[in-house]
Length: 267
Image (cartoon, rainbow, N blue to C red; front, side, top):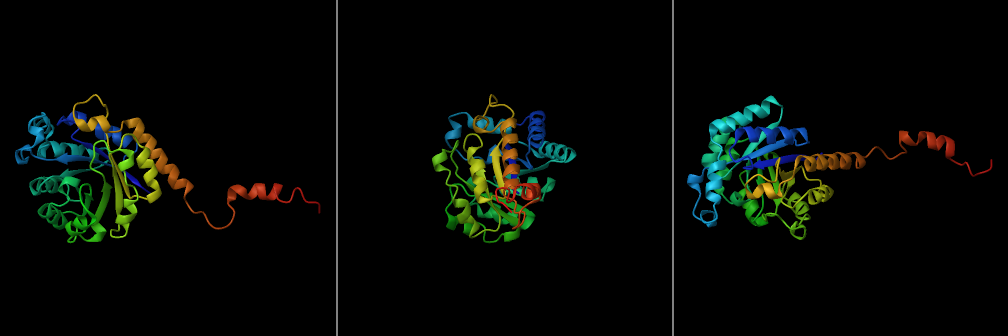
């Protein structure tokens, strides 16, 4: 059955108390895994974020090793699977010290071969988002990762992504090359995620927040707890109605068969 990754990213703005609340609410409302992001703004190149204030926001949202450990320990305490994305080898090393079971490589680093190769050697499970990359580039990036430990997420790196740009059939394209394929959904709401169930993604990743009034771009298109719960309900319902229960009639039909079969025929 499809699992949900609730991406709290840097919506917590570096506030451990708020991050714990997000983790708690995500688990409570159906998330199977919760993910944050590890980065260090000292490694951030010059760009438009220097003129629009985002560098300062990124700096405030950083999670150092102590904070990440606090969140990992808290998640473990409430029995929530918690992991992180890495933007560089340096970030991956920090994550590995706390949790070497699973790591995510975001779309913008999906062609970062040194990072990918490091993760291939040091983590048991690797998730890579495919946004901004061609199929050929993804295949090249993942050449050193055993298929059993790799998951590719179909992703369109547009924030928010238009429904007309979602390109859901690409999930099936990736399945021709990779054993484990999921969907990282950047559209508003949960409609695209629900429709993606047709393609049986192993994961659906959605940005998650507890309030759209919080600062930062991601909070504006992230889903809220009630939307996460609805998505979980849809996934559970989709699983139930698509379960194959055999080629004969079901137990729920026994009484109808007994009472109503042939009732309009004269013996």
